[in-house]
Image 1 (cartoon, rainbow, N blue to C red):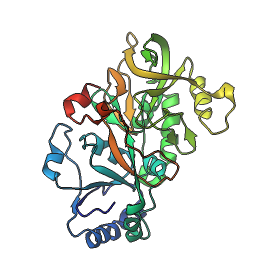
Image 2 (cartoon, rainbow, N blue to C red):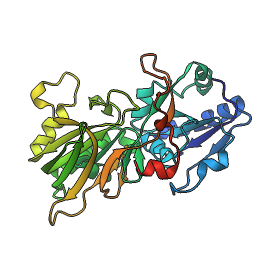
Image 3 (cartoon, rainbow, N blue to C red):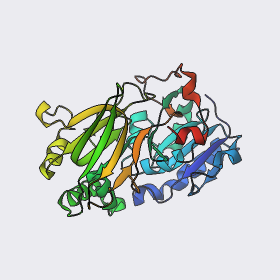
Length: 321
Protein backbone atom coordinates (compact mmCIF):
# COMPACT_ATOMS: atom_id res chain seq x y z
CA UNK A 1 0.00 0.00 0.00
CA UNK A 2 1.43 3.32 -1.08
CA UNK A 3 -0.07 6.38 0.55
CA UNK A 4 0.23 9.90 -0.84
CA UNK A 5 -2.29 12.04 1.06
CA UNK A 6 -2.27 11.03 4.72
CA UNK A 7 -3.81 13.01 7.54
CA UNK A 8 -1.65 13.03 10.69
CA UNK A 9 -3.37 13.94 13.96
CA UNK A 10 -0.90 14.67 16.77
CA UNK A 11 -1.56 14.77 20.49
CA UNK A 12 1.25 17.10 21.57
CA UNK A 13 0.55 16.44 25.24
CA UNK A 14 0.83 12.64 25.07
CA UNK A 15 3.59 10.57 26.62
CA UNK A 16 6.73 11.53 28.49
CA UNK A 17 8.63 14.81 28.19
CA UNK A 18 11.44 13.02 26.35
CA UNK A 19 9.02 11.66 23.78
CA UNK A 20 7.35 15.06 23.32
CA UNK A 21 10.75 16.63 22.77
CA UNK A 22 11.29 14.37 19.76
CA UNK A 23 8.07 15.30 18.02
CA UNK A 24 9.83 17.68 15.66
CA UNK A 25 11.64 14.66 14.16
CA UNK A 26 8.29 13.02 13.43
CA UNK A 27 6.74 16.13 11.91
CA UNK A 28 9.77 16.92 9.71
CA UNK A 29 9.98 13.32 8.54
CA UNK A 30 6.26 13.25 7.74
CA UNK A 31 6.49 16.49 5.72
CA UNK A 32 9.47 15.15 3.75
CA UNK A 33 7.87 11.78 3.03
CA UNK A 34 4.36 13.06 2.23
CA UNK A 35 4.40 16.48 0.47
CA UNK A 36 0.59 16.26 0.11
CA UNK A 37 0.05 15.26 3.74
CA UNK A 38 -1.81 17.34 6.33
CA UNK A 39 -0.92 17.68 10.02
CA UNK A 40 -3.56 18.54 12.61
CA UNK A 41 -2.69 19.34 16.25
CA UNK A 42 -6.01 18.18 17.67
CA UNK A 43 -9.45 16.78 16.91
CA UNK A 44 -12.84 18.49 17.24
CA UNK A 45 -14.62 17.79 20.50
CA UNK A 46 -17.96 16.72 19.04
CA UNK A 47 -18.38 13.25 17.55
CA UNK A 48 -21.35 14.58 15.59
CA UNK A 49 -19.33 16.93 13.38
CA UNK A 50 -18.89 15.77 9.74
CA UNK A 51 -15.14 15.73 10.29
CA UNK A 52 -14.14 13.26 7.58
CA UNK A 53 -16.35 14.92 4.99
CA UNK A 54 -13.80 17.74 5.01
CA UNK A 55 -10.96 15.29 4.37
CA UNK A 56 -12.58 12.98 1.85
CA UNK A 57 -9.46 13.00 -0.35
CA UNK A 58 -7.21 11.57 2.39
CA UNK A 59 -5.99 7.99 1.91
CA UNK A 60 -4.65 7.35 5.44
CA UNK A 61 -5.44 8.53 8.97
CA UNK A 62 -2.36 8.47 11.21
CA UNK A 63 -2.86 9.16 14.93
CA UNK A 64 0.12 9.93 17.15
CA UNK A 65 -0.61 9.58 20.85
CA UNK A 66 -1.84 7.00 23.31
CA UNK A 67 -4.90 4.79 23.37
CA UNK A 68 -7.04 7.74 24.43
CA UNK A 69 -5.99 9.67 21.32
CA UNK A 70 -7.07 6.82 19.06
CA UNK A 71 -10.27 6.49 21.08
CA UNK A 72 -11.12 10.13 20.33
CA UNK A 73 -10.39 9.61 16.63
CA UNK A 74 -12.74 6.62 16.60
CA UNK A 75 -15.39 8.86 18.17
CA UNK A 76 -15.47 10.78 14.89
CA UNK A 77 -16.51 7.59 13.09
CA UNK A 78 -13.96 7.33 10.26
CA UNK A 79 -15.26 5.25 7.34
CA UNK A 80 -14.07 1.64 7.18
CA UNK A 81 -12.47 2.37 3.80
CA UNK A 82 -9.97 4.75 5.47
CA UNK A 83 -7.05 2.83 7.04
CA UNK A 84 -5.85 4.03 10.44
CA UNK A 85 -2.18 3.99 11.43
CA UNK A 86 -1.66 4.03 15.20
CA UNK A 87 1.64 5.72 16.11
CA UNK A 88 2.64 4.91 19.71
CA UNK A 89 3.20 8.16 21.57
CA UNK A 90 1.29 7.74 24.83
CA UNK A 91 1.79 5.99 28.15
CA UNK A 92 0.34 2.53 27.55
CA UNK A 93 0.09 2.23 23.73
CA UNK A 94 -1.83 -1.02 24.12
CA UNK A 95 -3.47 -0.88 20.69
CA UNK A 96 -0.20 -0.06 18.92
CA UNK A 97 1.46 -3.05 20.59
CA UNK A 98 -1.42 -5.30 19.58
CA UNK A 99 -1.11 -4.14 15.95
CA UNK A 100 2.67 -4.56 16.01
CA UNK A 101 3.33 -0.97 14.94
CA UNK A 102 7.10 -0.34 14.62
CA UNK A 103 8.55 2.32 16.96
CA UNK A 104 8.37 5.92 15.81
CA UNK A 105 11.70 6.95 17.35
CA UNK A 106 14.60 7.33 16.87
CA UNK A 107 13.98 7.09 13.10
CA UNK A 108 10.47 8.05 11.91
CA UNK A 109 11.61 7.72 8.30
CA UNK A 110 12.12 3.96 8.70
CA UNK A 111 8.51 3.66 9.90
CA UNK A 112 7.20 5.11 6.64
CA UNK A 113 9.28 2.53 4.76
CA UNK A 114 7.39 -0.22 6.61
CA UNK A 115 3.94 0.93 5.46
CA UNK A 116 3.84 -1.06 2.17
CA UNK A 117 4.15 -4.37 4.05
CA UNK A 118 1.32 -3.61 6.47
CA UNK A 119 -1.95 -5.52 6.22
CA UNK A 120 -5.46 -4.48 7.17
CA UNK A 121 -7.13 -5.54 10.40
CA UNK A 122 -10.86 -4.88 10.58
CA UNK A 123 -12.03 -4.18 14.10
CA UNK A 124 -15.64 -3.87 15.20
CA UNK A 125 -15.68 -1.27 17.99
CA UNK A 126 -17.68 -1.65 21.13
CA UNK A 127 -20.23 1.03 21.94
CA UNK A 128 -20.47 2.51 25.44
CA UNK A 129 -23.72 4.39 24.95
CA UNK A 130 -22.95 6.44 21.83
CA UNK A 131 -19.16 6.36 22.31
CA UNK A 132 -17.13 3.74 20.42
CA UNK A 133 -14.24 1.98 22.11
CA UNK A 134 -11.49 -0.17 20.64
CA UNK A 135 -9.90 -2.03 23.55
CA UNK A 136 -12.23 -2.20 26.53
CA UNK A 137 -14.85 -0.38 28.56
CA UNK A 138 -14.88 -0.72 32.33
CA UNK A 139 -17.47 0.11 34.97
CA UNK A 140 -16.96 0.31 38.71
CA UNK A 141 -13.44 -0.24 39.99
CA UNK A 142 -11.38 0.70 36.92
CA UNK A 143 -13.91 3.36 35.88
CA UNK A 144 -13.20 5.08 39.19
CA UNK A 145 -9.45 4.41 38.86
CA UNK A 146 -9.21 6.30 35.56
CA UNK A 147 -10.73 9.33 37.26
CA UNK A 148 -7.96 9.16 39.89
CA UNK A 149 -4.95 8.89 37.53
CA UNK A 150 -2.33 11.57 38.24
CA UNK A 151 1.18 12.27 36.96
CA UNK A 152 1.22 10.08 33.83
CA UNK A 153 3.97 12.15 32.20
CA UNK A 154 6.27 11.56 35.21
CA UNK A 155 5.23 8.12 36.42
CA UNK A 156 4.23 6.39 33.19
CA UNK A 157 2.26 3.17 33.68
CA UNK A 158 2.87 3.33 37.43
CA UNK A 159 0.27 6.12 37.56
CA UNK A 160 -2.42 3.61 36.54
CA UNK A 161 -1.45 1.09 39.20
CA UNK A 162 -1.46 3.76 41.91
CA UNK A 163 -4.87 4.95 40.74
CA UNK A 164 -6.13 1.36 40.84
CA UNK A 165 -5.02 1.06 44.47
CA UNK A 166 -6.68 4.39 45.34
CA UNK A 167 -9.89 3.22 43.69
CA UNK A 168 -9.79 -0.07 45.60
CA UNK A 169 -9.54 1.78 48.91
CA UNK A 170 -11.98 4.56 48.02
CA UNK A 171 -15.24 4.94 49.88
CA UNK A 172 -16.74 5.93 46.51
CA UNK A 173 -16.26 2.45 45.02
CA UNK A 174 -19.84 1.56 44.04
CA UNK A 175 -21.96 -1.56 43.92
CA UNK A 176 -24.34 -1.98 41.00
CA UNK A 177 -26.26 -4.57 38.99
CA UNK A 178 -26.07 -5.67 35.38
CA UNK A 179 -28.31 -7.51 32.92
CA UNK A 180 -26.38 -9.59 30.40
CA UNK A 181 -27.63 -10.76 27.01
CA UNK A 182 -25.61 -13.89 26.37
CA UNK A 183 -24.36 -15.29 23.08
CA UNK A 184 -27.45 -17.51 22.75
CA UNK A 185 -29.87 -14.65 23.48
CA UNK A 186 -30.64 -15.60 27.10
CA UNK A 187 -30.70 -12.81 29.69
CA UNK A 188 -29.22 -13.15 33.16
CA UNK A 189 -28.85 -10.61 35.97
CA UNK A 190 -25.96 -10.14 38.38
CA UNK A 191 -26.07 -8.07 41.57
CA UNK A 192 -23.44 -6.70 43.96
CA UNK A 193 -21.08 -6.00 41.03
CA UNK A 194 -17.85 -4.13 41.78
CA UNK A 195 -16.07 -4.38 38.44
CA UNK A 196 -17.39 -5.06 34.95
CA UNK A 197 -14.95 -5.08 32.02
CA UNK A 198 -16.14 -5.46 28.41
CA UNK A 199 -13.20 -6.34 26.13
CA UNK A 200 -12.83 -6.03 22.37
CA UNK A 201 -9.17 -7.13 22.22
CA UNK A 202 -7.10 -9.36 24.51
CA UNK A 203 -4.68 -6.75 25.95
CA UNK A 204 -5.68 -4.81 29.05
CA UNK A 205 -2.78 -3.12 30.87
CA UNK A 206 0.92 -4.00 30.92
CA UNK A 207 1.30 -7.79 31.30
CA UNK A 208 -2.38 -8.25 32.18
CA UNK A 209 -4.59 -9.89 29.55
CA UNK A 210 -8.31 -10.39 29.18
CA UNK A 211 -9.63 -12.97 26.71
CA UNK A 212 -11.01 -11.35 23.58
CA UNK A 213 -13.62 -12.49 21.05
CA UNK A 214 -12.65 -15.09 18.47
CA UNK A 215 -12.10 -12.41 15.83
CA UNK A 216 -11.63 -8.63 16.07
CA UNK A 217 -14.71 -8.19 13.85
CA UNK A 218 -16.88 -10.37 16.13
CA UNK A 219 -20.27 -9.01 17.21
CA UNK A 220 -19.73 -10.34 20.75
CA UNK A 221 -18.01 -8.79 23.76
CA UNK A 222 -15.94 -10.71 26.24
CA UNK A 223 -17.13 -9.74 29.70
CA UNK A 224 -15.14 -10.00 32.93
CA UNK A 225 -17.32 -9.69 36.03
CA UNK A 226 -16.30 -9.30 39.67
CA UNK A 227 -18.89 -9.26 42.46
CA UNK A 228 -18.72 -9.12 46.25
CA UNK A 229 -15.91 -7.75 48.39
CA UNK A 230 -12.93 -5.65 47.42
CA UNK A 231 -10.58 -8.59 47.87
CA UNK A 232 -12.26 -10.24 44.90
CA UNK A 233 -11.02 -7.40 42.72
CA UNK A 234 -7.42 -8.05 43.81
CA UNK A 235 -7.62 -11.77 43.08
CA UNK A 236 -9.42 -11.18 39.75
CA UNK A 237 -6.78 -8.66 38.65
CA UNK A 238 -4.03 -11.15 39.51
CA UNK A 239 -5.99 -13.75 37.54
CA UNK A 240 -5.47 -11.70 34.37
CA UNK A 241 -1.73 -12.43 34.43
CA UNK A 242 -0.47 -15.01 31.91
CA UNK A 243 -0.22 -18.42 33.56
CA UNK A 244 -2.38 -17.45 36.54
CA UNK A 245 -4.01 -20.45 38.26
CA UNK A 246 -7.59 -21.21 37.33
CA UNK A 247 -9.01 -20.37 40.76
CA UNK A 248 -7.82 -16.76 40.45
CA UNK A 249 -9.39 -16.11 37.08
CA UNK A 250 -12.52 -13.95 37.25
CA UNK A 251 -15.90 -15.01 35.91
CA UNK A 252 -16.27 -14.34 32.22
CA UNK A 253 -19.03 -14.42 29.62
CA UNK A 254 -19.51 -13.91 25.89
CA UNK A 255 -22.28 -11.35 25.59
CA UNK A 256 -24.20 -9.33 23.04
CA UNK A 257 -24.82 -6.43 25.41
CA UNK A 258 -24.67 -5.33 29.03
CA UNK A 259 -27.25 -3.07 30.67
CA UNK A 260 -26.23 -1.28 33.87
CA UNK A 261 -28.45 -0.58 36.89
CA UNK A 262 -27.25 1.66 39.75
CA UNK A 263 -27.94 0.34 43.23
CA UNK A 264 -30.60 2.25 45.22
CA UNK A 265 -28.82 5.23 46.73
CA UNK A 266 -25.56 4.08 45.18
CA UNK A 267 -25.03 7.11 42.95
CA UNK A 268 -23.44 7.24 39.50
CA UNK A 269 -21.53 4.24 38.13
CA UNK A 270 -18.03 5.41 37.05
CA UNK A 271 -17.05 4.36 33.51
CA UNK A 272 -13.94 4.37 31.38
CA UNK A 273 -13.34 3.40 27.76
CA UNK A 274 -9.83 2.90 26.37
CA UNK A 275 -8.51 4.68 29.46
CA UNK A 276 -10.72 7.75 28.97
CA UNK A 277 -13.27 8.91 31.55
CA UNK A 278 -16.87 8.49 30.38
CA UNK A 279 -20.10 9.72 31.91
CA UNK A 280 -22.42 7.00 33.11
CA UNK A 281 -23.87 4.99 30.21
CA UNK A 282 -26.99 2.80 30.12
CA UNK A 283 -25.51 -0.10 28.16
CA UNK A 284 -22.49 -1.51 26.36
CA UNK A 285 -22.77 -3.44 23.09
CA UNK A 286 -20.95 -3.67 19.73
CA UNK A 287 -21.13 -1.44 16.70
CA UNK A 288 -22.68 -2.49 13.40
CA UNK A 289 -19.72 -1.03 11.53
CA UNK A 290 -16.00 -1.68 11.26
CA UNK A 291 -12.82 0.34 11.46
CA UNK A 292 -9.76 -0.54 9.40
CA UNK A 293 -6.28 -0.49 11.01
CA UNK A 294 -2.85 -1.00 9.52
CA UNK A 295 -1.49 -4.15 11.15
CA UNK A 296 2.14 -5.28 11.12
CA UNK A 297 1.64 -8.64 12.85
CA UNK A 298 2.14 -11.57 10.46
CA UNK A 299 0.07 -13.88 12.69
CA UNK A 300 -3.07 -11.73 12.67
CA UNK A 301 -6.04 -12.27 10.35
CA UNK A 302 -6.33 -9.31 7.99
CA UNK A 303 -8.97 -10.39 5.49
CA UNK A 304 -12.09 -8.34 4.94
CA UNK A 305 -15.16 -10.01 6.52
CA UNK A 306 -17.59 -11.50 4.03
CA UNK A 307 -20.75 -10.24 5.77
CA UNK A 308 -21.91 -7.19 3.77
CA UNK A 309 -23.89 -5.89 6.75
CA UNK A 310 -20.59 -5.20 8.52
CA UNK A 311 -19.77 -2.47 6.00
CA UNK A 312 -22.41 -0.05 7.32
CA UNK A 313 -20.78 3.31 7.92
CA UNK A 314 -23.47 5.83 8.76
CA UNK A 315 -23.47 7.44 12.19
CA UNK A 316 -27.12 6.59 12.70
CA UNK A 317 -26.56 2.89 12.09
CA UNK A 318 -23.41 2.77 14.21
CA UNK A 319 -25.08 4.47 17.14
CA UNK A 320 -27.98 2.05 16.97
CA UNK A 321 -25.60 -0.89 17.41
